[in-house]
Amino acid sequence: MDHAADARCTDLMTITRYVLNEQTKHPESQGDFTILLSHIVLGCKYVCSAVNKAGLAKLLGLAGETNVQGEEQKKLDVLSNEVFVNALTSSGRTCILVSEEDEEATFVEPALRGKYCVVFDPLDGSSNIDCGVSIGTIFGIYMVKDFKNVTLDEVLQPGKHMVAAGYCMYGSSCTLVLSTGSGVNGFTLDPSLGEYILTHPNIKIPKRGKIYSVNEGNAKNWDGPTTKFVEKCKFPTDGSSPKSLRYIGSMVADVHRTLLYGGIFMYPGDKKSPDGKLRVLYEVFPMSFLMEQAGGQAFTGKERALDLIPKKIHERSPVFLGSYDDVEDIKALYAAAAKNA
Image 1 (spheres, rainbow, N blue to C red):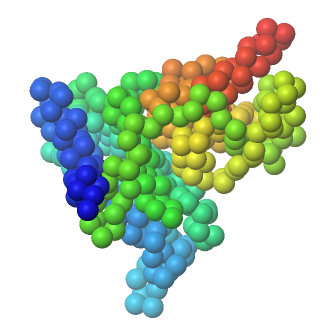
Image 2 (image 1 turned 90 degrees about the horizontal axis):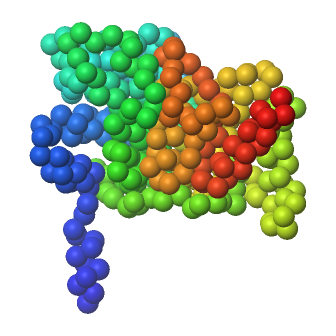
C-alpha cells in the first residue's frame, strides 16, 4: 500500500487553506482579503453550476424572454453579473465595482464599504455558450487609500498597482487561476467536495512556445509589425519549425492554454479597431498581471501593458502576451517600425 500517495490524496490544499496560509505571512493582515476572495470563489461556483446546466435550464435565452411560469428569463451573462455584484457587495470588503456588463461603475453603499475595488468580466466569451466552448470570469483587485471618500480615479490606475488577479474557466473542468503577487497557482473544482483543490502549483510559462494565437480573419487590416510577426511564425527564416496556430475566440481559454503550454496570444489594433477589442481594466490588466507573475510578458504595441493608465473604465487596448522570448520578438518589430517611421 502506498501510504505517501494516500497522504497526498487526503491532505488537500483547498483554495481557502492556501489563502489562509498566505495570510499568515502578513502579520498585519486582518483577513479582509481572505473574506473578499471567498466571496469571489462562491460566485465562481454559482456561475459554474449555471453554465453546466444552461442548456437544460433554458438560461441561454435572450434576457427579457419569459419561461412557462411567466418568470422573466435572464441570459447567462446577465445572471453572472448579478451573482458577482451581489457576492462582492455583500462581502463588506469592496467600495467600487467595475463590470463589463454595466455602463457605470457601481459604488457600494457606505455601510457595506471596504478597502478593495474589484474590476471584472462576469462571463467572458459568452457568445460561445451555445456551442460548448470554454468561457470564464476574469477579475482584478485594487486596494483603495480612502474607501469612505472613494472616487472613480481609484479605479483608473495602471495594472501594476493591482494586488491580485485571476480568472475562472468553465470548461471540461472548472479551473480557477489566481495570483496574489507572488506567483501563479491553479485550482480545480472537485464537484464531489464543492471545493477548489490546488492542482497547478506555481505555474511558470515556458520561455518560448510553439503556438501563436490570433484572429487571422483580421489580417488584411493589421499593421506592419503584426503582419511580419505572423509571417515569421508561419515561415521562419532561421531554420526552426513553424509555430502552430490555435485560436478559440474565448480569451480565458486562449490565455489559459498560452499560460500552460507557452507561446503568444495577440489581439492587435488594426485599421478597423485601432485600439483593439479587449478592455483594459478587466481583460488586459488581469491577464497581463498573471502572465508577468508566471514569468512571461505583456505588451500593448507601445509599452508594457501594466504601465498603461486608463482614462475611461471601458477603455480598450491592443495586447500581445505570453512567453518572454516570443513577446520580445514582437517588441523588437515594433521598435524597428518606430525607428523607421
